[in-house]
Length: 210
Image 1 (spheres, rainbow, N blue to C red):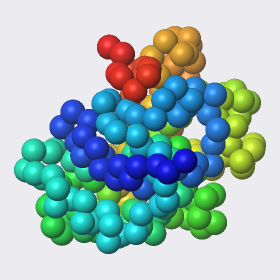
Image 2 (cartoon, helix red, strand yellow):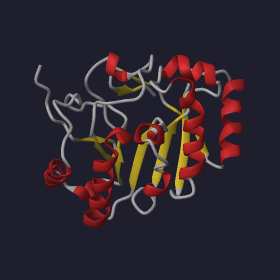
Image 3 (cartoon, rainbow, N blue to C red):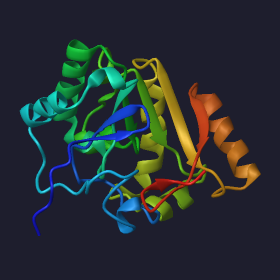
Image 4 (tube, rainbow, N blue to C red):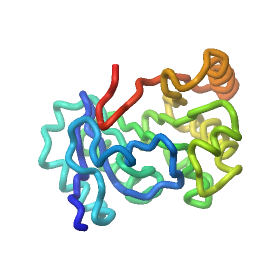
């Protein structure tokens, strides 16, 4: 089936960039199992991955003065398209001077086969990493990463490293999915890593549930 090419979409005051359908995880809670859009966007399933030039040209369709930030977050893991992401982020910085955020599962260094944390320097202002749970075994069950048991420690290592190059690093869990004790353990992990911890809202059927 032919898919539409929704490369940019709006969420509140941000313009979001959708680069890929690929992901290193098959999360049990993934929004892709519930539908094809987020927050009223068109389908985010891509017929193919866009080139840098295609993404760059899409920005001309939007009034960039309306947005507070540009966020790399689509239906796949953004670092699966890391080389294109870096070029787009550099373009956003040069053309619009807007803050850039990357929402990630934190497995980018495993995906790329090298430590990519230094490559965030000067391109990305904020990184949000899905921690999901403080328990490595539960993390493996929830995310079903193709990297297996290596995924959890690699995600923590990435958080530890990327904070050296990015001004704001936050790890997140979803409200109501953890016990207070588990949330306290997540806070302890983030404190040890020197990053922020945020409990975010649950998203269901493409809409944020408040």
